[in-house]
Amino acid sequence: MQVAKRMEAITPFYVMELLRRAKQLEAQGRDIIHMEIGEPNFATPELITQAGIDYLKKGYVNYTPAAGLPELRQKISDFYKQKYQVTVPIERIFITPGASGAFLLAMGVSINQGDEIILSDPCYPCNQNFIRLFSDHVKKVPVYADTAYQLSVDLLRQHWQAQTRGVLIASPSNPTGTIIQANELAKAIEFVNVKQGLFFSDEIYHGLVYEQGVASALKFSDQVFVINSFSKYFGMTGWRIGWLIVPENFVQATEKLAQNIFISTSSHAQYAALAAFEPATLQELELRREGFAKKRDFLYKHLLRLGFKIPVKPAGAFYIYADVSQFTDNSQAFAEQLLEVAGVAITPGKDFGQNESQHYLRFSYTGSMATIAEGIERLERFINHL
Image: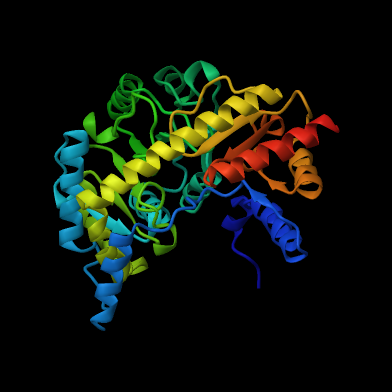
């Protein structure tokens, strides 16, 4: 018996080994500052949690329609109308087990073996692995500060080939936290539409944006796949719930696939998410967003002071992708040593691609301001003893 051939192309999440070591050190009594994992340190907003509890207390925790609760899909449609001034029929909205489920549905109904999908390098590693479940043709295009580490229409023109089927753009992105400006997004979508290709828009960090310029791909076309999640902005990581918006001609296929591989997203998470769009919840989330902006500014300022290079200030998400080449040419070894010596866990660039990854580290600012400040102090002491 042998593991399926497709698994040879699936890359591991290297930071998980570093996290395992961090947990070992904590079990030994060490105090570890966690700046490696992309998970908000806030509790799920109370109104959301209470809505889930109220549903569970009824005792009837049953399947929902494969596409999700109609009332939740309607709330998402209303949210797009209010926030982005775009109209999305609820038939095109699917509730999924996290953004991961949304990616699986989107790519499962649209990608054939041999189709090439373009990604930026660096990018979130799971995205390329979702593609590789359906096609072994992933093209990672190096991106740099001149395009804010985003794919531009010029890069798409340069790298689009006969076998290219589509592109995936994440804005705000993981690991860089940068956004693609609305006018650039519009041009990229227009280019892909002219090519009759697939456009996947990863918008899971929408809501956690601190500068002007972000836009949903739906503003420019209804021939796009939009992936979003309740995990990041809404603080529902462990609830495992997200959503997918598909072009109209993919609705039937998406529902059929969802019926087969998910049956439905967990019902208690869906009923809880109904409270995510309540005015009181959104007000609380906005305060959290303002807090993230302050933590970004604090970490950004001090990393620059310590000698890290950050050519583009991140405009969203909760990450800073910093050039550590002044101190090392091996960011993996730097991260491992920093953990062992100073008790600070960060993610090496190796997880996000091959584009100068040995020179980069990703810092997550999801912890408290006090924790981030302590992490900076430890990092400074560590650097001073190199």
